[in-house]
Image 1 (cartoon, rainbow, N blue to C red):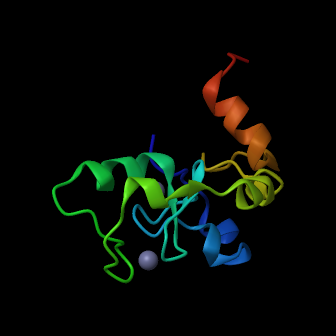
Image 2: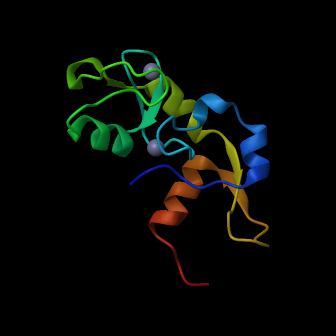
Length: 108
Ligand SMILES: [Zn+2]
Ligand SMILES: [Zn+2]
C-alpha cells in the first residue's frame, strides 16, 4: 500500500517531512533511508526491488541493510489531525483513527 491521500488543506497544514518523497502522498509506515529521507514502506520496497534503487530526492544508492523504520515519525504521524478526503464529509480525526476506518469501513 503506497501513501495515504489527504486533502489539500491538510497538506498545507502539516510538515512536508510527512509527505513521501516517492509517491508524494502522506507517509504510510515511514521508513528512513540512509540519506535521511522518508518514504512509505511500500514505496521503499518497490524501489529496493528495482534494478537501480536510488533515493528520488538526491539520487543516493539505497541498500536494504541501511534503511530502517522511523518509529518517532510514525508516532508523530499517528497523532496528526486529518480530514476525510471524501468531498463534503465533515469527519476528521487522527491519522491513526483514519487508518482504522479505511481498513474496516462499516456501512452506516
Ligand atoms: Zn509513498
Ligand atoms: Zn535521499
